[in-house]
Length: 206
Length: 283
Image 1 (cartoon, rainbow over the protein chains, first blue to last red):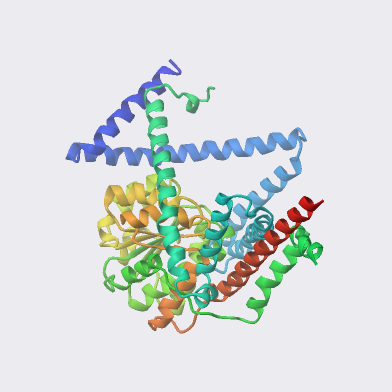
Image 2 (cartoon, rainbow over the protein chains, first blue to last red):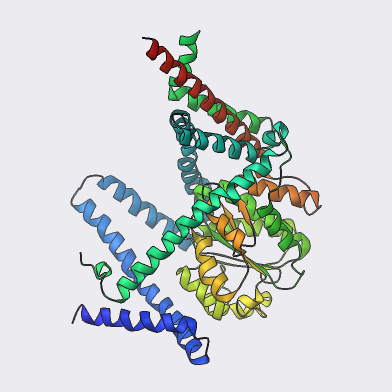
């Protein structure tokens, strides 16, 4: 019962909304609109469960003094601090909440992301070696794209930005399109497996 | 001499870090500016926004990003907003990413102030809406149900600008600014299903993923990374919509010199690699 009812709901709704997509009639549209409203309500309940589960996880970690429990303490403290800041100062531009966001959170996150540039520079210096024909081709195309993106590239040769654009629009796009088709087919296959009850991990099983 | 050149293949990473820091800082400190080649994807967004009727259907900007990628995406948001406000195009802002909420509020308020635009009349900001794809779908049916209150808790019906906006048919263009796959979802759930025009502003890392959608026309255009922002800044300055280039144009110089440094390092690394190989073969 615990498994069959959710699976039946998924099967019926899954099939119904595949059919709905291809039938642009009024009843089909009404069903679609109703479903979206239900989705929003379900989403709110799901958010409550998500917050509850997140807080429980960290509280448990702190109470058991598990490895890295200090980070959990910082996380919960920061979350409570930001909630209180928003409640008491409001969230308009210029408020205390916005100041903490703009002058603490944003620079910290930006710094973490910016550090990537240094690792990427070091990694490309070490990894980009013309060891084979394929590696050399990759190296040359990387040079063209990098130079094509910057004004100095156009100064070296005016056709470089166009060549860089062509590389992105033709060979890059062909590869990306293949990947996108693969992802699309993967999504379709997984969705069908869920609708037909073959894939059941979403119920918490293995 | 050969031994000296071979050392280039094994530079200490701290030297690489120090050189990169210099390549970024020096152009920023000396405000080196350059002119950019504007690529077709940027130009098509610019042309599209340039043809939106003033005081007609609004442009919707979705701030779908976190502060970590704000350095790349904020300049795009400011440039597009300046273009819209200078032309009298109305703007609806929202965010589908939790932290994009405060980013959008800051940018929209500041740019609106520059042009003396009023909230509720010239622009509206709805902040973060949880539910991502559900919100995208809901707006295709009924925008009011998806965005019942604005960021300042004003009811939808009390916002004069929103009176004529019922669904995507009343939106000229949706521009999703993101560091992840939000534009992809906008294409599927809003563009394909409800035929609204979609454009993307993406970080340089994510931008190549969208090229297939540019060719199929599922994306009107794309602003790719700092370069996209700098190109848009250049376009609005040249057209007289704004008086000076913003931060993206300055930051592009730092990016340009760091690209040149990386190219130089790769060349030196390869020289060092081949020489070391030759020395080893001789031994």
